[in-house]
Image (cartoon, rainbow, N blue to C red; front, side, top):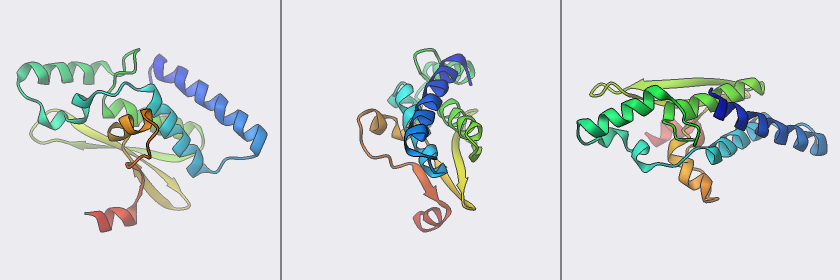
Length: 155
């Protein structure tokens, strides 16, 4: 987690503490979702990063690799690895069991990353990247809290 992400994490932590002082302890699943949405507000939405698998040409590939290697920029520009990893690290700081999942893409040197968290013995997947625009426009998310059962019936 870089300085940009750390500053956002500290702000979000203070918001969670303020909520809990006023309303009592927040359930873990609610904390996880709050982290997901608030972190989503801090990242720059860039359609190209959602479509990495459709890279056309060497120049475009090299641009994405450079961003991938650099990590999150100070304007919030980031790839799935940075976004989901930061959410996982933040959830762990808040006492939620969370894991970072990376899947290698055989045809390219890049890979995709998701995150997951556990509540009451059930793991739930999340992927912040495709939800960024939805979060930033106030819409309902589609890629948070996908349970193991939903995965089995979905695929």
